[in-house]
Image (cartoon, rainbow, N blue to C red; front, side):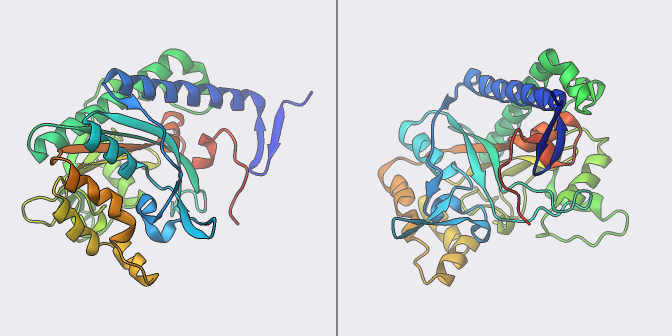
Length: 340
């Protein structure tokens, strides 16, 4: 009997495949347990949505024919979760598949991307100022990630080693506070060696790795990104230029968690929507940008303003961190299709 599994992605040893399943199962179970312990309730959300449910990047959305009408595969369940949080005033999370038709430009691993990946999204109500809520979100993210790392180390140390992970490094991460800096400070770091980055530039994996190296590859939170490059319903700072957002960068695949405080004023969100990339996309399709979001905006007319926030964990990128891998294809248990 052969000890090799042949797939469209190459040949893999059954021993390593077995270890990958162990790591994925343990890590996912640990993340779920940490969120439940923190008061979140797991819910199911829809993967078939209109463009409102696929608006992280509308130009990267998979479109479908839904009984003669246009539908999309969900990029994020955030708006569905927000509806539950605003209506019921309780914390919820989902573990769902996310779909994005885009290239992931990694200078170390060209063409290696996932068009379908696992996304873990918690959302809940908060109390306090926007800055205080952002700090609470950051605290929850770090606690949740460390809980999962600890669980994997306790149960899968041999599997991690077999797959190329660095057990000693993962143990050291548990004893460190994750680094924190603002987007503006990140630009200063990137421009120290002759960089020409300016406010409003997005940070891709190349830049994220430079920031991580600056902090000796300790997972790093970057906060307060420019409003123009983030989702339209994020809470904005008083100057309107930044949002109360946070990305957690982790070696070696970069941004692994994205989170933010949500704006609670429906009229402000409507204004931000009309100025956003998703509105431009809908106009290009000769549509009304507000129409797909009608149910979402009904929430703000029918319910009291709700301070809330949440984040999304890219599970395969987290697995890549555990395995010390920059190849996202090494993190998945099975893949049926591969783009050209």
